Amino acid sequence: MALSKVQAESIDLTATYAFSGTVTDTVTRNLVLLQTLTASSSPTLSFTSGIDNTYQSYLFKFINLHPSASNQMEFQGSVNGGTGYGVTITSTGFKAHHTEDDSATTLAYTPNQDVAQGTGYHEIFQQVGHDEARNSGCGELQLFDPSSTTFAKHFFSRSSERTSDAHYAISQFSAGYFNTTSAINALQFRMASGNIDSGTIKMYGVL
Image 1 (cartoon, helix red, strand yellow):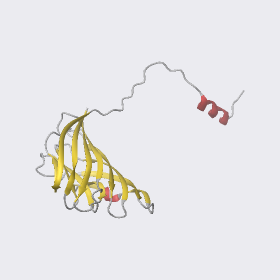
Image 2 (tube, rainbow, N blue to C red; image 1 turned 90 degrees about the vertical axis):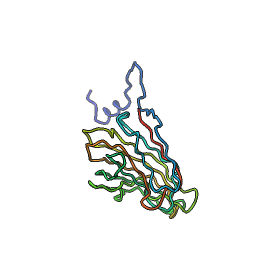
Image 3 (cartoon, rainbow, N blue to C red; image 1 turned 45 degrees about the vertical axis):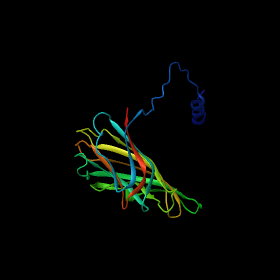
Image 4 (tube, rainbow, N blue to C red; image 1 turned 180 degrees about the vertical axis):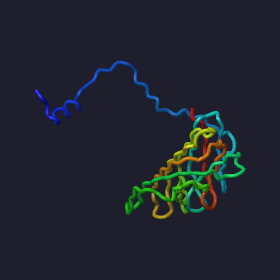
């Protein structure tokens, strides 16, 4: 007897299948702590060693970064061990935010994170607050195969911050690449203006 389309789809959705074997979860990240930088009214935090071909991926964790003034945190790479920062970047991002008083909620593309074949710094945090001691920003950035001399160097980041203005909770996402076939061997993090008063950045090699 011929089945209607609805009947056929219903049978497909409720079908069961026999399986024998072992299911292995391979979505893991084994991290090796390589370096920790702690801010103390620091204009920049720079990792100028340890980024090499030992690992194909490096993870940077931002822990309670508190600025001297409310503004963005950003980063750039170097191909000369930190002598200069200004590698060509293409990047983009989006954010979700929510105020403490429930007066504003947003999920939006953030054009200020866009860098289009530029040599400026890429924004990771949009606006970390400073007016209260509890304001800070946390998150992580992962950089892939920085020592490759064949491919562009991809990265992505996610951050969470509490702002001074209206006390927004902001979750920010970004991704991009260093458009160079030279090895990236240093990274620098800074606020767009002012210092990083306190907080920690940890660098891990990803196995």
